[in-house]
Image (cartoon, rainbow, N blue to C red; front, side):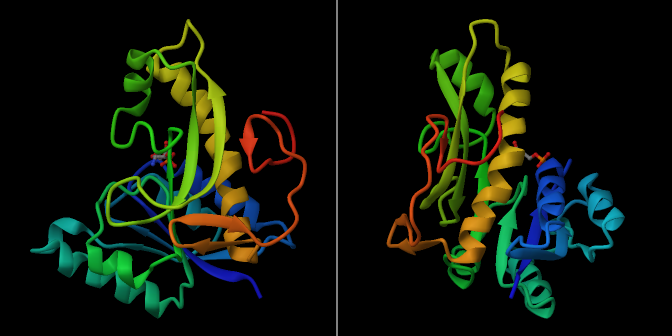
Length: 219
Ligand code: GRF
């Protein structure tokens, strides 16, 4: 059975689009049943509509508290019988109660090699710090922003000529391959969460030096 996935977005939705494309494969272990935006008119909603996926906007500004907003999200997800939740550029922090409700069934993607460079303006800070490798991480959501067990990472070299924009573009291309891969690992049961670590339940394949675990094809 494919896992029923809900995707939370706030904006552009290019990672959502990558997940939509991945779900078209007949053997992909997940299907997107609901795309939820906290921002009315978020560009990503049109990707879902084009793929005939149910969409819903729950504007956080309509709620007096974070708890009330998260309760509305939760109710919508339960009504759609969502089993796994993916944040894809969702720009709201969740309450501890919401995180507990979706514990170990909730993924996020962040454009750095976590635990380094949590938070906003990642690529600018990466360049300013002078690191030579950056990348992206899919992790299990915990109450602290951009923290939680790591499902998969991709490493991207930082070039001397890079600006925040050029680095962001190369990392984003990796994100689009990494997120579908990481969701498949979780949805298929190829990994399980043991405390604060994600462990493989199946045989390891070839290990590429830049994707861990590896994904097929070249960057
Ligand atoms: C991505 O870089 C993601 O890692 C971060 O927010 C951005 C969302 O982009 N959390 P998009 O909306 O998926 O295009």
